[in-house]
Length: 415
Image 1 (cartoon, rainbow, N blue to C red):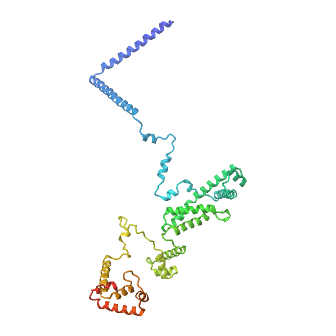
Image 2 (cartoon, rainbow, N blue to C red):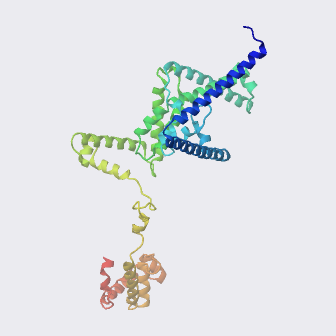
Image 3 (cartoon, rainbow, N blue to C red):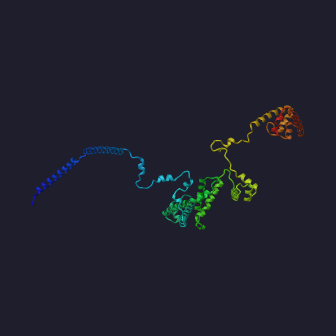
């Protein structure tokens, strides 16, 4: 059968419409055949409620989204996001440094934890030696020109170019720092051995570092030993010298410190032998010295205390407030002496004016300067013997009238 194109399209449209109508009729028949009509209504109500609930939820969600878009972003979110994925270096540095821990401050940094091999050590020392030679050349030029040499003159005197001079100086400086940082742990090891001898740990670390820097300048590769072995002596010497000079208010000779260390070793040896409380005789015999010398040594090394220092840690009372001044007399004694002076002046009135003046000059009453018999004779124009006779007679009169004036009450002050 042959059909025209326009008739085919028309037939297709009719078939589509017929299929739609059949589908609608089938749905209607199902709804009508359903015997549970109330359930149908309840399902419709539930669908309506669900739609309402969905609408409410979507409204709240959109409101929250709008508020978030309008609100500024919190600072914590910005700090937590890290585009590069790298940790916060500044926070780690602040957490790792403890200002109250001198060891951590002293050994902070990875360069202090890297140990050097013998080959690396020798290479660094060679660079340092070259830099030191260049400094010697500069010093000679300063003496020769009486001024600071230029870099060109310095390089010509060293036989190198200016660029090589700068590179060698920088290499020597960096090598020196690397060698010092690699041996700082040895400084800490030595400083801990001298704790409790008058200097705190920070001062010991500082002095040990100065000794380490000096050992870098003094070390020679021809010494036949490694650098740490050579630097150990310089560090220990610097620490001990600082203790000798700054550990006490009153400095002691170095031989006294040697004797003190000998006494400490002897005391430790006695304790190890079982004598937990050794006497001075035991320590002196173990140290090889006499007991008298040990007592003098211990009395000379006593640590002085400040008068302004607090007696108790929880109070402000100082030693000056509780220490008696021996140069000042007690109030009772001062009053007794004043009363005795008054009685003596009254007792002198029983003498004649000439005898009274002789007694005053002889015993220094008034000016506190006693005079001899010859000096008194010169004043009165008398001989020495005559002055002595007048003095004897005046003293006899005073003894006769001593009890009458009640001066026996001051016998405690006279004897």
